[in-house]
Image (cartoon, rainbow, N blue to C red; front, side):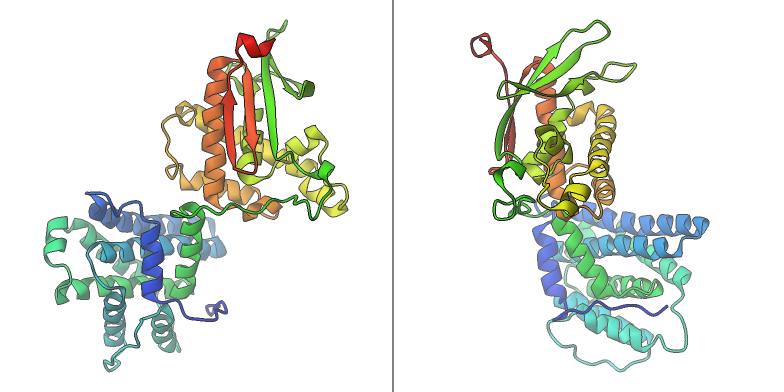
Length: 408
């Protein structure tokens, strides 16, 4: 199967990619950053081998290429970040990569166009694919060997040789191996690089946080179909005959049914509606709360049925329950900083909401909703009663303890 190129108005250059990768790097200020980046590159190549093995076992060819694209994109990020950490100009990395490829294919050396772009790399490989395939197994083996060499080098030796022809040739070879490995999966390196930028921008936005626009703007929906931009939901724990339960009040009106843990082992799941409120604060989304507050968007039948319907509610409840069970084994995410939540967990959530309006929300928004939701959950759990304040405009979720004075 021939690789399919996405139509882009301009080629993606290595300097542009390196700049955007550096903006999202969490290792640039770390004393052990270079070591972490080198090991990260080795780990991504190892992940590629592991994912291909599993795909081969399960006979999933499409999944194999799709997974390879993500692993190779991550490996590219680490490799370019290693070069940046060593003070190597991205154009030099690309120039030596092109030189290595031309040598492999028996082409004469020529001065590359500056800035070097990924399309130049793909063009050389594509022109030599005719009449034969680039063998996948041998390419993965060569990439793994080169990754191991980089991982085994010491930071001191790399820094002392920074910018030398020998080091540039080594990193250029790594870059060329990565490009050839992409081609063995019928992938273009430029597409892999662009997808990786989309991924890191979704996960780690850098210093600029631009929240997704509201799904129910006043210009499209009447007031009674919009989620409240500000609300204070009171959680009240009460003893029952069978088990303790929680009720909620909004403006003095009880909302929803009393909730118990629904578990043989008490775990305070009865307070879990705080997570739905967190989704409102940080995602602007919650079919569950829309249903509870009777704020479904009935003026648009397709939105009412699909985005605010039963299936969307079930998915939201499933996400809340799944994350809760995951967090329960990790002290309800106490001590987890923003930017540190497992990528795999966030990616799984994204796959669960695929096809619904909320799937446009980047992963960092989901992370904020989850971590802030659990922060308030822990506070509510400790106090047993209190008010959860949702501010959709400023994207905040806070907790107010109930005192004897304001309970009267």
